[in-house]
Length: 190
Image: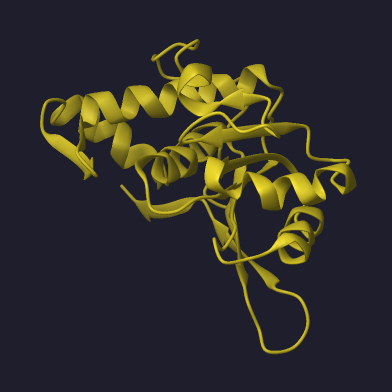
């Protein structure tokens, strides 16, 4: 019995329906093949940056294709994605990043001021990547960073399983700090 993992449908659709449109946003259009290649480039960028299975990569973005690319790239290499509410401010962002043990943060350039205000207190976050333009706090700008990497499927020296964690979702509450909820990587049985 083989299990389908979170990122498998994208890879399969790239093979089956490579030239069909997978995603369209704000005038940008990607076929399944193009979308999968962008995801693979990001997965390779993560691996080169030292992101390993189980490592947390957070993102703070408004709606965009990069948001989906991050989710699937993390799933392809066994990293855990951590979405951060785009309405959060410094202390809330800091709490999520520290509480989740995040090592990498990808964020919209429009949030650079908020990220800059807490960066010095984020000792475990080693990777800062901006989307939508260069940001002063970022080590890399997303598009130029992923363009340096292979579009081929990442080859891992470890296995991914259906019980691996794929994401931690933080819910805002009426009392105290946001609390993280875990989701597993397995989706269904083939």
